Length: 142
Image (cartoon, rainbow, N blue to C red; front, side):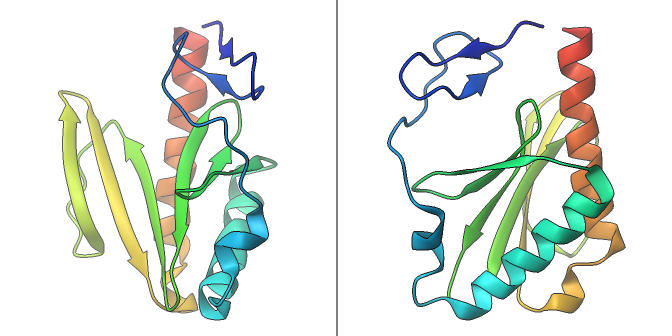
């Protein structure tokens, strides 16, 4: 699948003309007044990088995207927690999800609120790894 690159901001997308924000947002702005959220974010980023390999981050006003070829997870920073979201092609039943939404026949969107470092565990990182791998697979097949 050929990715579309926005001529204004340089971000890459799966669909040409995909709606997005080109407005830059400094990464550090996400952490202002949120030291606990920053610590959780840093632990998550390191754990995912160790498992999935290198990826870049895109700081948007709404959240921070983890991007390999395309976005495979997003993190929103709060004062005392972080919210992680990602999509998978299978349904998972877990009490850990604050929300699970069926987007289509083969796409489920998951939200997890993380309040302490112990919640950034192998299970969570494996789900994010799966989202990462699924995005790569879709691009190759597409």
